[in-house]
Image 1: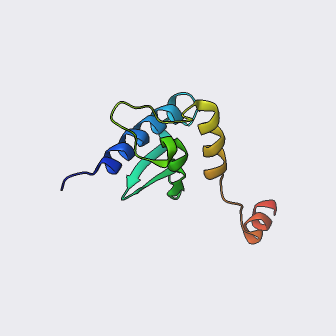
Image 2: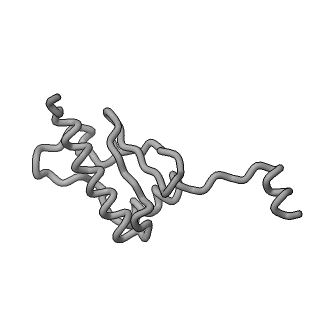
Length: 101
């Protein structure tokens, strides 16, 4: 099956996001960034896959030409987004009560 320009761009972006997230944002090998169809998803360790808002990195919302850089791809911005997306789930009230006992 031949990959489309969009799929190729998403794979390139996912690789850059994973490298940046692991290397400069401090997530290490636990951070996983994958392309699923026409989406990018992220997860931390055994956590759930969470959709990543990749469109912000596309110039004018279009697929970049080969070699054209993605927009807003920096450690500060990515770290902030991953922190929001990958925050650990709140424990249920029952689990919190059991932990306090």
